[in-house]
Amino acid sequence: MPAFIPYSTMKFKSFLAKPFASYVYKQVKRSMQTAVNDQDAIFRELLKVGAATQFGKDHHFGEISGPEEFRQAVPVRDYELLKPYIELVKEGKHNVLWKGKPIYFAKTSGTTSGVKYIPISKESIPNHINSARNALLCYMAESGNAAFANGNMIFLSGSPELERIAGIPTGRLSGIVNHHVPSYLRKNQLPSYETNCIEDWETKLDKIVDETINRNMTLISGIPPWVQMYFDRLMERSGKKVGELFPDFSILVHGGVNFEPYKAKLFESIGRPLAAIETFPASEGFFAFQDSQHAEGLLLNTNSGIWFEFIPVGEVFSENPTRLGLRDVKIGENYAMIITSNAGLWSYNLGDTIRFVSTDPYRIVVSGRIKHFISAFGEHVIGEEVEYSLMKAATETGVHITEFTVAPVISQDRGKSYHEWLIEFENLPEDMNAFSIKVNENLRKKNIYYDDLIRGNILLPLKITSVRKNGFIDYMKSIGKLGGQNKVPRLSNDRKLAEALGPWLEN
Image (cartoon, rainbow, N blue to C red):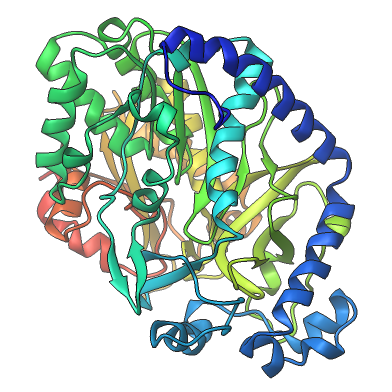
């Protein structure tokens, strides 16, 4: 929505938003046709600016003329390998990864690196702000629905309170973005700043319900499991479905995890159909968003300060993996997504895997995490496969899933190892054994390596362990990761999470 619109009356605002939505929608459509050229131009600009930084000098950017030379000079890095440069920035050094100093650090937790500090520059902040805006404006232009701009909107986010490191404001990405909500939307935005600053998720959630239950909520946004908690509290308090409580509620914006495992329960809680818009934001950048209610996948953000590379998943841990540019990707392949950005991230491995569902335009689905997989026996099972296998069985049997995770059980005796699926059910299957067989057969059809292991009697069919109601929530609470941007890993290659869930299993 346009930053030049003053706040007068809400309906006047939505009236003015329509022509701006049309303008932005046309821009997005044009960028679909110029994606490869835009990527080439972004690469050249990043290289030019980066040449004056310490990172650029260390990697001889002045001698690089094209992507292949860049790939030779700059190996793929994760946060741990980039950390020495981040530490220099945290010490107050200038021109380390990008010109000057970052305007923010996005603080996020990593599984191996502890707390991560991701730089956000003056040049990269529009990527975070405008991409979310563009997702809404594309929906508005395509659907003609501008009425949601007249009501209250909520994003279930982390605290907007920021600390300072080397004079750089530092906090959760969602909290940082909160500071960039245009003034004309402030009167629409809930919860209050004071409530948003509450750290304890359950205390915060009760206050959010207090502030929103009697308001005209038209847009609700957040990570699906935490949105579901919000819906549960609203229904407990009001005795009504969310769609009845908020009759003008018309858009659910979600991201962070695959929507499918949560979709049925969320819409049951709402009680009626409405539009859902998927986004793919992270502390490192806003990579893609759903630009259409009628097309599969998310439109890759090819003209927003990020240069993308893609590594076939099977080569991720190779010494010299194949690194493809946008023009060389294929539909249906799983790739690890590598980014170079105007925040000063160079050949940075996000840890996310994606799959192209279209190359005209370039649309993707997020298929999983590199670290969230099971290959204890060489099966290479990824998140997309387990989610598909479970949700297909659930849909066919009328079962609703609240949350789940999968871990290997490794036996020294041949043919006695298996995958354990720890599942919290909204409603239990009538026949758990039959349900397990369905899930197992779905996974066999989806993953040939898993099928081979079952056929060869290396693995037993999967086994399901029921997690009691609110078990995952209670577990996340016990480790201080309830709410915000925290997510339960779908897959583990070890049993740390499975064993930690022990106190919350059904007897």
